[in-house]
Length: 392
Image 1: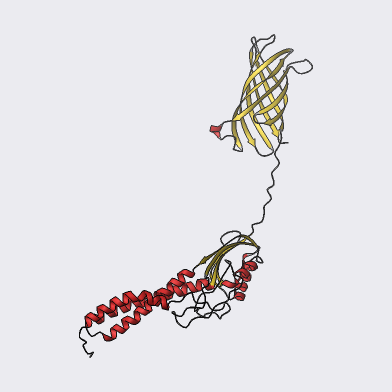
Image 2: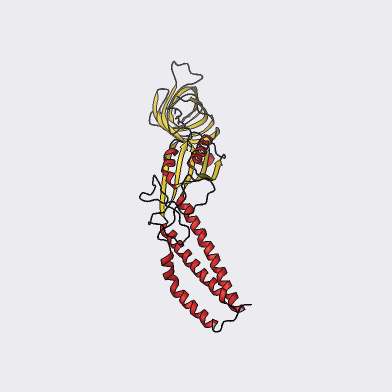
């Protein structure tokens, strides 16, 4: 049973006032001037860093000298030094992802680092992997150079963030919280009222939770400064496929089997024969038909038709994309000789492409001509024909 001290409520109020006024001055006197140093990079695995790695000068120092760790959070190091949180992304093109991963594991083991994440993608035709490394900060430049031995470094970005101020502020806050904790513990030893004891113990619980949180922040900052983080992407190089352009035919020579029905003013005459066709494309061709009347006894042809023209596929009926039965319309213009009578021709073509492939085509068509000029005058002629062509 504690002895009751008269006027303790007044003394408690005065102690709070003195505490609020003196915490800042005491913290400045007892806080460290700089962060504590990290353990050497080659320390055994599992060793907890007492302070962060010390790095001064460039963003990626080639050598790091740790300073001695103080015995308590309030003991300051001898000099203010820089703390860097190093993080980078590297994209490496390799010949084989699995071989590169084995070499990467060996590299990490030699440098005293650890692989915290590894993902191998087997879904695509060419392998890839994403790996996250934690390595001692002082060995980061050496590791980056050795990554070039795995393959071709396509992209590399390194960022070094100074976290010295965060670490210093956290140490300062820890010192202030520990000082306040000790004063509350001293006040608790003199308290004799239940209400005062409960209120002080509640504050002590809150202070201890904040102290643990700040200590966790210090451990995190120490680890970030002691070890650099590298995110690697390994990709296999896809083989280059040489695009070979397929040969394109320049024109399409062909043969024709025409039938000519000449509807003259006095009678209708029929002619049969053959012809040649040279087509540069579906839109332009030259045709020559030579025909003879079945009952004619004259030597030589009885009718000759030479025309230029072209055709277009019907977009509503497939646009000529099918292998079978593609309809088309066309126009023709040229010269005709009907039994020693020379005339001009204008006409239209209605046709059906029966079959086609890359090398061959077969058409059935009907050409409707208006013949004019000449002794016979204007008259109508119909030329149905079967035409075959090859690519050249």
